[in-house]
Image 1 (cartoon, helix red, strand yellow):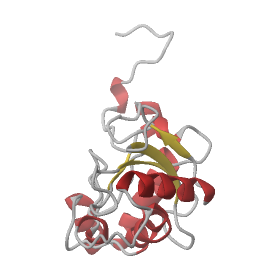
Image 2: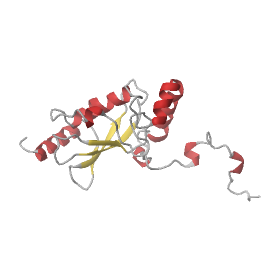
Image 3: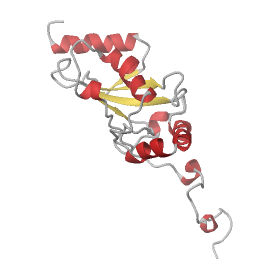
Image 4: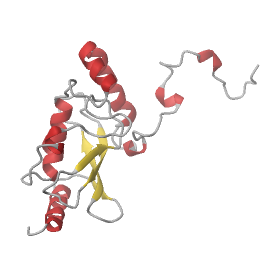
Length: 186
């Protein structure tokens, strides 16, 4: 492992051999997607997320950039961009860590132990601190709507909106205004 590019190749191979589904972007090894399963015994168990990873030129001396493509409700993940607030990845990264550590340790720890006092999603953090049962219900709703395994979870990304049918009518107070196919509007 004499160069960062060799290390990048080794870490990618190690990640793929660890049974993670990896999809490269532009046939390179600098940007790729990884399919990540929610950790056991967590609110996210059973969910599958598409994670975007970007390796800087100085990898492994500089940390990878990691973000959720599939929408997730979490105090330390920006709901719109999918950016992850992860001190271990962003500030305390060491060349001793590798990509497998990101998916087997860092991300599971993030989901198991959210930190509402340092949020990227202020609404999720406030709800978690104010009303834990409602927060947990919202997390599970997001898992059901966005992170179902085998149903193209990558198609419901953080920059897309659900249709009214997918979202349900919970927040739609004007149900009387909904047009029904086949009936003329008054």
